[in-house]
Length: 446
Image 1 (cartoon, rainbow, N blue to C red):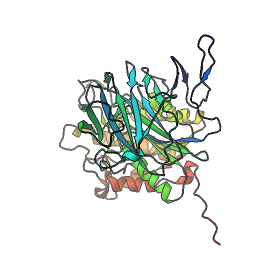
Image 2 (cartoon, helix red, strand yellow):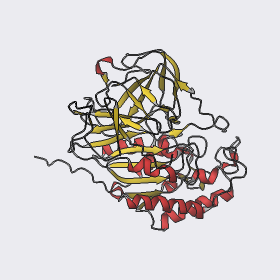
Image 3 (cartoon, helix red, strand yellow):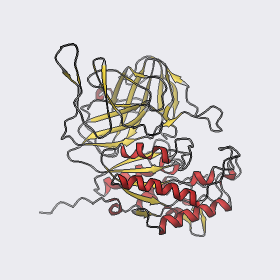
Image 4 (cartoon, rainbow, N blue to C red):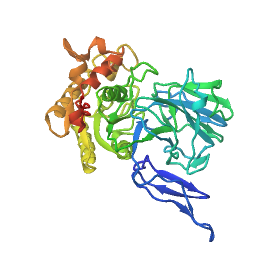
């Protein structure tokens, strides 16, 4: 899947389609044996759109892998309803549905957006049907993603939305985001996309096929991409509370009058150098960062799984332990890639992991030898000058009396992942000017 563009646009015009790469706006037409050309639904060239929410796609992993994802192998004639909190609001909204890791076409029979109610329900009066190039349904080829047409669905900053879509045909769950930290509801047989509520046959904390939400804004809004592993993804946070690190940074921006979208491109279990529970950073960085239209800066936090996984049930016994040199080499590739596209990249130090998973099957995730690798990489992040800035998350959450361990008040319980308060402290440590952002000027008093 290397090099597949996450934001591949597909516009269906009659029986034909045009693929549009991210950032390119074209007028799609269909010519049918002398018939007058039909113009597809397109976005005006001078429109301002910002990606306001994202979830990094993951491929399904083997049944033989030590971690089981727990998803149904496929959905058929079922509706899935999912919830997401956007970072910045706008006058219109678009939704991205992805089949990037699919091996067969994904048929979306219908899709709707609405304001959430309790326990998987929606406020029925707010329900809006989505279209795809003017059609109610769309077929997404393997390896592709599609965006809905702009929907008249105004949103405010930090507002939650419900997205429902109906899958009439057999749809293997091969494109998903595992650690959603949010309940998704899957119906029995039938199209319930506009139903106020339905009896869920299955619930899951994973996200299926839903990969992005974009909003129309009055002016161009800068985007901050947070790229990383489970500590970016939100492991350790309260389910449904939107207290992940990117969420809390978005909260802070709104509170401080900083206009910027915050995008979560974290995958729990991801690694820099090798595939983990998602494809490696070296494989997915271009797709998950450059596909966003207005990226100002990237905050990069990854590497602890490269250090911790070898010697655990998560890897083959023959997998070698990477040292600081190899991890830094991977970092340099990521930095160069960002700079080639004119994007600032901020290095984040890896947080402490002393005693991680102690007493469990993964207790060999930590060792004194692995800690030496973490310290060496963190020292390089702080002192090399390779990144455009540094945010020292290690210093924020470590125990002053035992610096190799996360402070108890910030520990979610596994000695690796911060809790809600830990992520809040980390978000507070990020300097907006380092990201190239400015605080809105206060209005002049009379």
